[in-house]
Image (cartoon, one colour):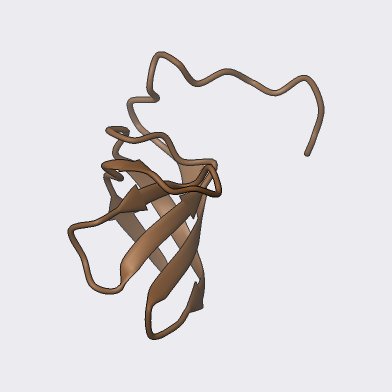
Amino acid sequence: MKKTVTPLGWNNRGEAVDFRQEPRMAVWRGIPGERAQVKIVHQGQNRVQARWLGSNEPDESRVVPPCDR
């Protein structure tokens, strides 16, 4: 399932988190304040895990990684 979100902060695992929705959504590779399209990979009772897919307006701090990880 794909969705558009704007995370507001970080969690202790280094994931961007959207605290406004219940359950909270943790976005792997997300940046707080960057509106992005995400793919939900797991939905539990207390947390939703999603993966960053892309953004129409990438955050200026986003860089291309040197390897394909």
